[in-house]
Length: 135
Picture 1: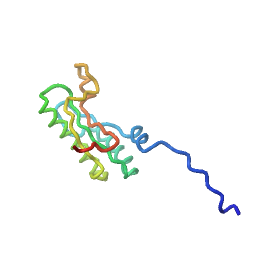
Picture 2: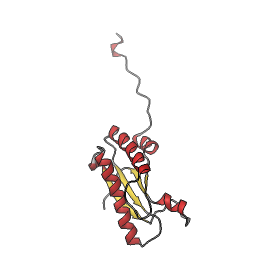
Picture 3: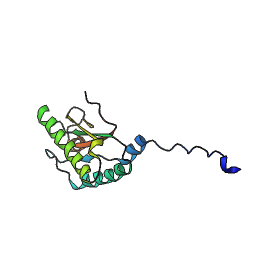
Picture 4: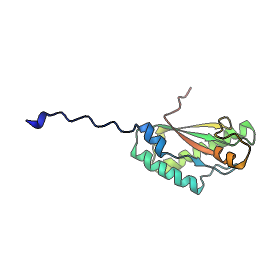
């Protein structure tokens, strides 16, 4: 019999990390605000669909700000942004236990020019595959 013929191993597809990076979008914010605006709602709703389909993925939401304002203020604002994004995802059914939040304030800008186009890129909740290790 053919019953005992070994099945060929399945072709290795993209890893969960690859899929995460291809599918998961950041949410962007208005200046000094941490509410989820419509374009961010769309991005995060798509993220939630992906994350619910991959319930084992743990990830970190980084809160980022542009470079205006004090360090302390921006750390607080980044924290509110990360948590607003987390709350939005959890409301859509993503497991809160899979989500770590961290604020980088203005410490890790994506773009360093002093203009609105650049600042807009820096005002974001950035989703990163894997949980940040808590020290």
